[in-house]
Image 1 (cartoon, rainbow, N blue to C red):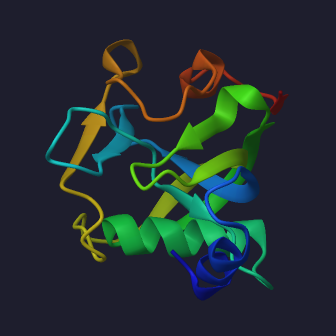
Image 2: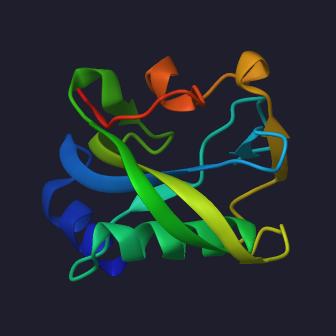
Length: 154
């Protein structure tokens, strides 16, 4: 959690806050999609994702988050969608509640070796679109389809 969010939580406690965030769809040469498992305690996965920091652009945020979580340097290729609302509300184990506004980018790998850089990822794996694991965030299925060509908004 960034210093900004720590300070905010000290002031308002666990009540629901908006959290502008980014997520990356990264495909390998087979067209499989990359996911990470943030915890060894359960088999729930996520896209590489995270909060946009103050003063940071969404494209810089997705580059930073992907590198921190995977060791990969990426280039955001195109916008896949912007999502928010109650469907994107989440309560953490510590009771803090957030409602994400998530900007999802289609990304291309520029360089790097796949490994967790920040210790937040306990498993890193590519899955086919037909075998996507259970996810923390309920993204629309369309963002995982290779034929998806225009940005979605929800």
